Length: 291
Ligand code: FE
Ligand code: FE
Ligand code: ZN
Image 1 (cartoon, protein in one colour):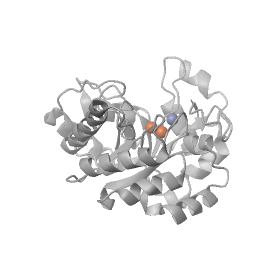
Image 2: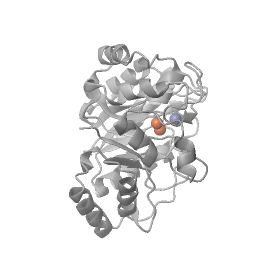
Image 3: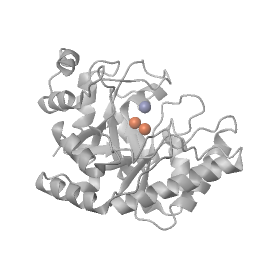
């Protein structure tokens, strides 16, 4: 069965209940959220009674909660230890984020590996490994390293770098990978032959490490290193290629998450999910979202 959803909001008042209801309104059977604004560290206390209500609704609607994803805030950078206090902050904040996932009962936490900001890939990777081993020493939460577009000094824009990080992590059951279709193409992988790409991933890392796939079209051609997402079928990846990825039998049980841009003030996810379920591109999608 296709497990598909999108990024949804998580606000301090409705928390997980708001997120579930938003996902259901899109016709989704999974979802991903930030536990607070991704660009700051303000986090409200998690209310367990709200979580319980949300879990009941998920059960009624056959949402498999073990596949629901949290995305770590992008202010965290585990690769940069130029300043002790900033590096320590990233470790501490991610540790708290893992605790929040535990309290919510979330299994998968997606993380951008980090940017080495001039320190070089080797030092950056060492910093990430060191931090992950502190964070993952006593938890059931699995951190999924996201494949990156290679913007600036981002680490993780190729499978070899991700593999080096995984090799350094002590608790292998706590580490995995999130493939992002826009990032893969932007970083130079040809997503039009996805089985070949999966073969390469399997050879270097191992397909069993994949815990999530971000489904995004890209505004830019392959190898552009730009990381600008586009709505499904409206970018350089194209609808057919994305459908082939979404329905690839080797990724059948993996949750697929849309992080495509809103159209004006409106989320496109209900229409994109419908289009994906129908396997038919709708060139009028954007005008439908707006009205
Ligand atoms: Fe991401
Ligand atoms: Fe992503
Ligand atoms: Zn991105």
